[in-house]
Length: 350
Ligand code: SF4
Image 1 (cartoon, rainbow, N blue to C red):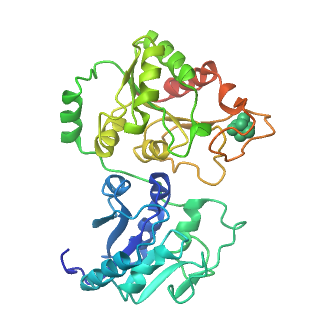
Image 2 (image 1 turned 90 degrees about the horizontal axis):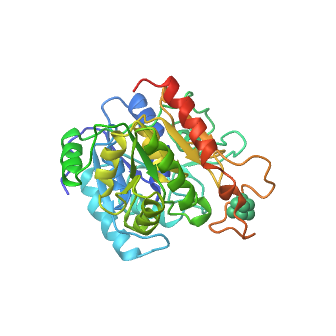
């Protein structure tokens, strides 16, 4: 860990989810506006680090192996002491947990900014109180931390934006033997949160068959945890979809998504990644809602956020359907998604 070189270096303690990390990007952008020349380092769980490394606002990512619920006080104290050497003048703590605020406190960072969260008076010394009505969007809540407590968030929020490693993309395409001569539609069939956010495999497979009949290649992109569902979709699609789930790391998945003409995704981290890459997007919502955490779509990039209308039980925000019928996703028909894709592709330059 090298000592600080920049006259003003600040530390962000990042959220634990990929999607939330992207919703925090407008905060980073605003901090650059407010503090010209600032170097922003981000302390982040290892599983989100590849996404944060692609944010142009970030100088360095310090990746950690603390899992959800881990206290590991001694390790946090040691890391905080090590971070003292880097001379941070401010820290922004995005998770609301008590333990997330410990490292900046142990690092003796002069200004420690965050929401009260779990009664973090003392650990933080620039404390914001959340007004949920005024700030319904998660991205707005994070951006609030760039302002003085009580001051309004500066709107509009900057969109999320990730850089692409073109060389790495070419290597990945060649390693996986992918054909880019046809337009590519990428499907992201996973959702770490749980099955109630996953569109059924048979629907993805039906959509893949219809898109392949129109001359599109269909790539299934996801982590090793999505490998089995990817296999199921590939089989049901009778070869129309290629299962790449688990065959790339997250950095390669970002690059592959950047090569897609269109992305169809569950409400997941990769949905936010696709938006941050400026890809035309059809997002499928089951038990969750786009109300608080919509993707930060770039200007000129079409995005359709779909859900079943008139279903009283939704959104229930459960990981698995408590009613068993799973109508929120079962009733979201492939034909409807195809219609949206048809409209988007008719208005988007290829
Ligand atoms: S209860 Fe309703 S919203 Fe929740 S998972 Fe089941 S069908 Fe979906």
